Each structure stands twice: as C-alpha cells, then as structure tokens.
Length: 591
Image (tube, rainbow, N blue to C red; front, side, top):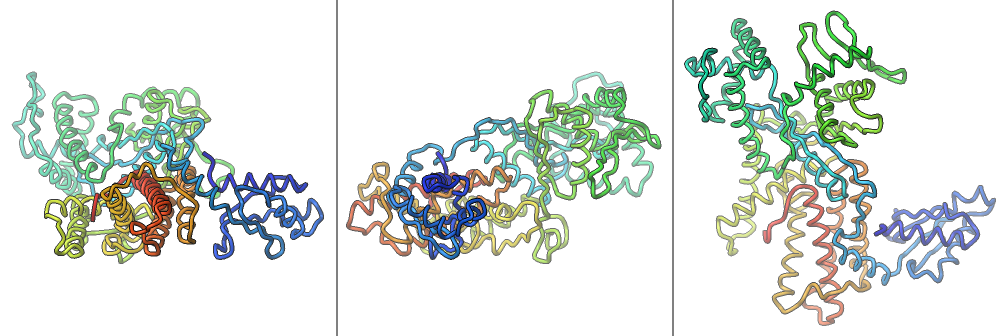
C-alpha cells in the first residue's frame, strides 16, 4: 500500500504532465504551514528555468489540472508559486479504511528481504548487568523488531564476553578459596559435579575480588595468566569449571534480559570464534595481508581519503595472544560460514568507532566477507545523570540494571497508587501494572533520543504521565481501550464500524497523522532510527487526545458519526500497539 504522501505526489505529478510540464516536479511534502494547507508542492519554482515561465503561472496551470481530482479537494497558488494542497475527506477516509483492513496496517514489507545479524548486548559473563548495558539492549531489540516487521530476517546475537584473562582470574580465585575441588586436580579422571560450586551472587563477588587482587599481587596475576592459558589449551578441569561459570551466568543474564523484554536468537560467545582464528591468521599471512611489526602481526587498513589517522589492525600481539579485534574478525568468519548474512549491524557504544572502522576494513580487505555485505556500527551515546555525567548510584557506584528497574517500578507503583486512590485496583494488579508502565518509562525514555547522542536519564520526567514519555503513550492507549470496551458493553460491534469522512478539523488532523504511519516506520528502519517512531506516536497521541477532548464520542446520537469515530479509534489503537511492540514494550489493560 503506497504511503499517502506518495499517492498525492503521483496525483500532482500527473497534473504537471497534463498541464504540459514534466512530472518530475510533482513531489509533495507535508505543509510547513498547517494553518494554511495540509500538503504543499514547490515544483513550479524548480520548473521556472526549464520552461522560462513565471512559477505562479506554472502552479496555476497545475492547479487547473487538479480541479477534477478525486484525491485532492483544493489546490491554491500561494506566494511566488507554491501550490497549497488539501486532500479530499472522502479519499482520506477510504485510505484509512484500507489501512484498517490490512493486516500490516498499510505498510509494505521490503521487496528483497535480507538476512541481518544484529550484535547487541555484549555483556561479560560472571558480571551483573549494569546501566552501561541498557542502551545496547534496548536499541538493539527495537531495531531487530522493526526489521522483522519490515520483512527482513533479523538474527539477534548477544555476543558474550567469556574468554581471556577474566576467566583465569575467576578460576584462580576459586582455587584459593576451595583448593580441594576436583577441577584443580590434574590427575582426576572421574565425572565432575553437576552442580556449580558457587551461586550467581558468589560469582559476582569473586570476579571483582580477583581483579583487584591481580593489580597488587604479581604472583596471583601470573597464576591467573597461566590458568587462562591452560583453559584455552583445553585443560579438562578448567573447561568443566568454565562450563559452570557459563551456565550460572547465562541463566542469570537471561532472567535479567527478560525483565527488559529483550530476547536473543543466538547466545554465541567469544570462545565460539576461537577455532576460526588459526586458519584466518594463516590466510592473512599467506595472501600477504598481514605482516610482523615489532613482533605483532598487523594488517594496514588506512585509506588515502582518511581525514584522521586510522592505525593498523592488530591481529596478534607479540606474545601470540589474540585481541578483541581478532575475536571480532573470527566471529565475522563464523557468521559468514553459518548464516551468509547480507548485513552485519553492531549496536555498540560510539566510543568504539575506531575499533569497528579497523575491523570492517580488515574484513573487507582480506575477503572475510563478500564485497556486497554491508557492515554498520550504530554507535550510541552515553546515558547520563542529571549532573551530565555517566549515570551512577547515589554513592557514586555503577548501578546494577536490576536495581534501576526496581527503582523505576517502585516510582511507578507510588504514582499509580496516588492517581488511583479509592479505585478498585488491588495490590497485585498495581504491582503488575507498575512493571509494565515502568518498562515503558525506561525504554521510551531511552529510545525517544537519537541513538548517537548522549542523553539525561531523568526518572522523574520519564515516569510522568504527561509530556513526551512512555507512560503518556500508554495512558493514551488505555484511554482508547476504555472507550472501545464501553462501546462493546453497550452492544456495539467494533468490527462492523467503518471510517467515514471527517466532520471536524481535529478529526481530520488525527486521520492525517494516523495515515503517516507508513512513512514514519519505513523511514525509521531505513535510517536505523527508533527515535523517529517515538516522535511519530507522541504526535499521534497528542492528536488523539485533542480529538477526544473536543468530541463526545460515546454520547453522540448520530450513529454514523459514532461508528466512524469508533473505527478510527480502533485503527489508532492498532497503530500505537504495533509501534510500541516494535519499541519493545506493551500496554496494560488499564492504568
């Protein structure tokens, strides 16, 4: 289904041709003066040179060619040659009715579906999720959902950090605490215990203790380095202990991501890429891409057009150890082998920009991926506190994600209790509602900002029921649900209602905003910009609430009007619910 603006542009282009001019001048945009018109075309200004004619005369000719249009109700020449356009109310009603009857709400899926692997999340095992993981999870999940809605095959990968010195530190610390465990006996040949020798809480305390110890105790650090080396060589006991670490950590991570309504298709790890490294390195050597420099193995990735220095991509350090660069390149090899993706999208902090420039160039230069594979780093900004610095706890520490969620939920609970004093809400329902609305507050608060920019995480503003917030969007949805339920309770059938021509300016404004769903969601996907969906549904919610306050919907005696309004509200509800589903949250039945 073509977008409304494309349909109007086609009509105006045909009018240009009918008037004797090129149809290329018929592009229509939304009016920047909605008090004067709904759409405008400035093509007559651009056509002046080609036809050596006054723009007002060209515009006048086109306006005359539109007099019998069934799509455009009025086209007036303004200023030096602008064409101010108002569309037909009947056509607008028909367009929305077609949207209402379409399972995909009038949005065409992509013509040539692609396989897109989206790398988001990126937590390290044995560590709790903290607020630094929030943006990658929220932005990545919304882009994955948006891509699926548009028809691409989206594969989300958490890409766990599970390899390297952190594992050696944990193993060494466990050995100091529990030296008699069988994992540390090189002669042990039996079956290792099925139950891990630690809980998630203990594990989350073990790593920072070990990390701190390694900074002041050289002997312990060397022991951890040796444990890392032996793990990577496949020492049986260490592999068994590593599996325990992984199982305990991943189960906890899944539980915490679930609280964010974030899901991954793949739970791949850095260690999964290790088997691909030797052949990849050998290929780079054999083909002359990689060479030694001060003992390290590097690949040059600078280009003549670079405006800033792009350092070589280090493949192996002088001691033969691999780096994040190596692992990321090997992961690309694995992804190409298993999935043949058309695009690789990394949702990672923008401070990693240079890392991804190096990795992408190296992957293309060495042929790890075909030339037509797109690689994109969507670098996001920092989530800051009201002081403009990275968000911290009250005592200055990094806040655990589950604690942030709990604080927001508590804030929402108190607000709902305050707003619904005396209402028939029980404690359990308020608690469940506060979780739903709290998640919307967090996600919308983040996603309504352009991903690449830093933003202030303001719990007081994000949990407000007024303004550009998640709770405001949900309140609008719940308002519509309440009207539709009361209509049904009075014997009405929503499915039998049909959208008719608007009878007021507020109704037409709401209809026009609803019709803009197609370009809003398509543009958001093309530009990898979830914040554009937030901007759209905020504007739509404002139009809905303006219409609601001006219109007595359920008490309207004219059944044709009432039926049309109910059908329109039902469509708005579908659009809003589809939009928040793409953003990764849902609405309660009531608030």
